[in-house]
Amino acid sequence: MRERVSDYTQPPPPTLIPRDGGGPPCCACNEKGTSALSTCSRRCDCRNHKRLCTNCVNCKRGTCTNFAYPADPAVCDDDDDESDAVSPSAGPAVPSTASFVDEKMREAFGEPLVNSAGGPTFPEWEAYHERVCQLRLRCVKDLSKLGNLGRAIADAIADEVEKISKLEAPSERAGVFVRTLIQRDPDVKRKRDVKRMLWRRLEMWQKGQVEELVCEAERLDQQFPTTQPQLDDASVYRIFNKLMLEGKVRAAVRFVTERGGGGVLHPSAQAEERPPGVTVHDVLREKHPPQQQPHEEAFLPCDDLPPLIDVDITDSTVERAARSLSGSAGPTGGDANFWQTFLLRYGAKSGRLRAAVASLVSTLANTIVPWDNIKALQACRLIALDKCPGVRPIGVGEVLSCLAGKCMAMVTRSDLETTCGTDQLCIGVKGGLRGLCTR
Image 1 (cartoon, rainbow, N blue to C red):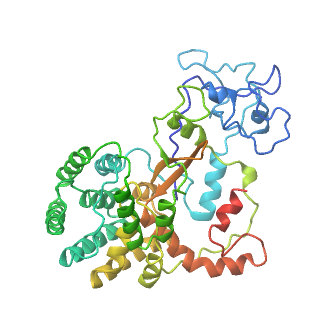
Image 2 (tube, one colour):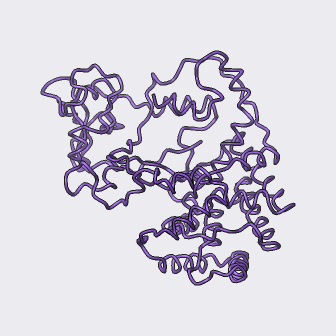
């Protein structure tokens, strides 16, 4: 089961219970009570002033997300001897839905909603993963004609993926290996020098010299300039030619015609149409909803649950999905071209890697995997795009996770079309369900 992690932190004031009437509302959200989707999430005065809602319309309707429900209806001070005293203005206790949700999840899948032991399960690899995720994407790109070196790298990646599927190692380990292996050195440019550098790093990984590899990647990352210079005509031609040779025709045309939009915004930049001092990072935090428990009304009553049928993923399925991969790299730096190269171009070693990926997808689909083992696989690299004006948050996930989703879509597509029948759920249309959910 996947655990939802939110980087939004509530302010430190004491926990409050919403009042059932009495006094004006604490904010003007859904003041007329006509909106069933209002949650006090964006334009709430209480949220903007870093305080919790106490008596708004959404609190009474049970839809407010700017409110921390206490486990105990008593509002008291831990240091007070009269711990049994209840505040007279507290009102009725608000029942928690956590136990109800966990009961439903156990009934359906055999595990609670949050399938995590809590705390760092693999502290060493989590620390390494956090360090490499802070590096910029300065990676070796051309990995297609490496010969024996390419086969050795494909074999090493297969070993790491197999350890994830067998729950022998966390997913952070594979991400650290890929990121430290392909870190680019600004002084190493010739093909033979790049191959010698990759051989050396592969041998260091096999010897267990992880700390040395991470330190080397951090040192090389600091040698690259922090700002990009203005592109001249020669640079534009070189980038356009590179994109065309990689088969990215659409991206090349959009680049040369300057139809790419406003570009990526820096987190510390001033946000457009916002008061002075409000940065892009602040806007991203406002757009990130806080973690909350789903309401009981969100669950449909069902006395007879359908059986869970295992999904069979083969290496041929992975091969077909790999040929349609596209997109940039996630937090650990392996983009679609990287995974296509090692999944398709190195013979038997690529076949072993495809089999390892198929085993991983089957494990994720057919078993209950602890969240701590795969949370790095589900991590995203958050970027802010300029909407001209406005900020659009985009999460760039790991390509391996995208590949697993493609494999599942290929295998289950026909079943979804048969089950949904004539229901207009956009089944079979690219991005159809996503468009339906966001309407």
